[in-house]
Image 1: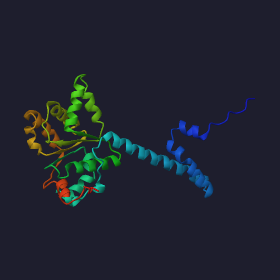
Image 2: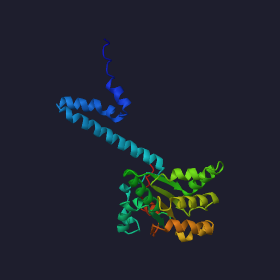
Image 3: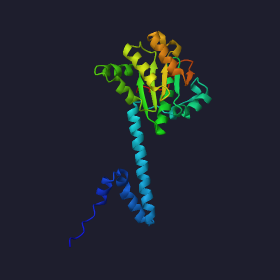
Image 4: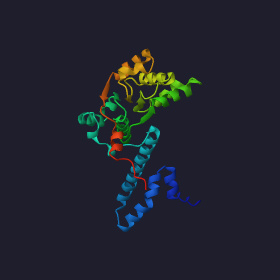
Length: 254
């Protein structure tokens, strides 16, 4: 009669089961359990809690990396009083209910009034809540359309973007809009209509989009963008310039 095969090493089993965070924390947890004389029933929940927490951290890091955020700004550095949009509106946007309802957000106003900061902070919050975000400038969207036009895969590229729950298009109106960017904006807004949330920041009110792109395309884009949308208009001077004049944000030279 053959002797029973030796069971696999626990580390090998954990690799097979794909439990990397249990593997990482098991030595410390088991040492603590032995020193403090834990009941055996306490060990597994502790290890599984470490695995769940580790997977949450890894998922958050992956969602952030895929989003392509420009700076990493969050509401930790946000000053509600410095933003010209009413505080009640800011609070309503931070609930992210508009994203779950697949509504759009347009933040329009002069440069430096917090438009991009607000969109990135909202997007970071969405990612922290398990949602997927895709971040683009209008110029980057045009580059994407141009790159995929050669092999006729623009539609497939846009379909991949639409896997996100929230799609952000930043800085509309700063630069002239080329034909690829104009087409990309329209096609993305049209494809996301009532299916995904789109948030845009713009130096122009959407009514002025026909100043930077063909009128027919602008009209069709704005019609779909503003239906089921929240429009926030910022005002005032540049927050960045105000901070510079106040001596903030610049370290003195040694």
